[in-house]
Image (tube, rainbow, N blue to C red; front, side, top):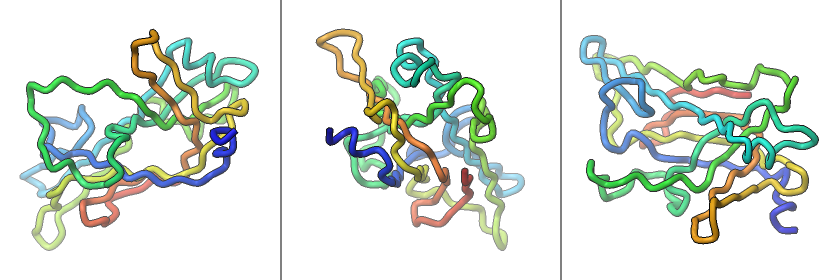
Length: 190
């Protein structure tokens, strides 16, 4: 009952990214610095969950057409700052465990869907000073938890000894990028 009662509640998540410095290209999430123009291009891509098990678990009467959203990279950390310990290149990535997912029913409006298009913004140099990503950047997600057949959070595991993977069904109102000081670099409102 407590989980079902979360439907309709507002949320705001600030998630650090770009903590390891600039990426080699904007094919990956993070930022790229262009020394010629003095600009910085910031890119984050939404995830599409299309596994039949997720589609069946999150659909109402029929499986949805698409599920899009974001993994929460470090759900166990409540702060928005980059971790104090830099990840080593040899470290294996921890499997994702919690995501915020928007469910789009078959035949629903396509206006709010990203369809593989990244969230991307270019920040230009101001007064000859290049933009700074010192301290990393923040992905800001705002919206409300959606009602999904009485259970806005759905979890699944491939076996009894496996950590569950959970998706929280949401309706996103705002996606934004901020610098480490909280200055807005760009935003998208739904």
